[in-house]
Length: 107
Image 1: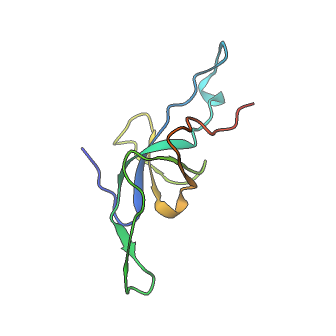
Image 2: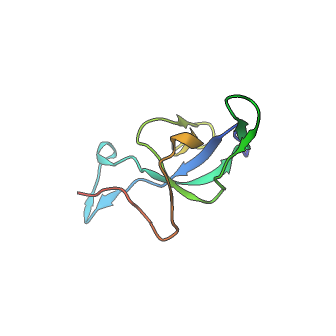
């Protein structure tokens, strides 16, 4: 089933968590929530607050984005791993260039 978000919502597949650091296998509680993901689908946009014009979304499927640690709605029915989330376009932090693989800080 392919979901079509409404208004300015964006459906994102989070990148998989890092399972190992060096040669050490990390337990589930120690794995970080990934801040990056790939857009699966986007809504058409929404009306301006005064209702006079339509504001289309500027994001496209297959773009890579950075999202906040908290927020968004996890869609368990779509993906049993909990990696599929839905955000509003205004909640996303950045659109990533193609060459950036993982901007998450590492210790």
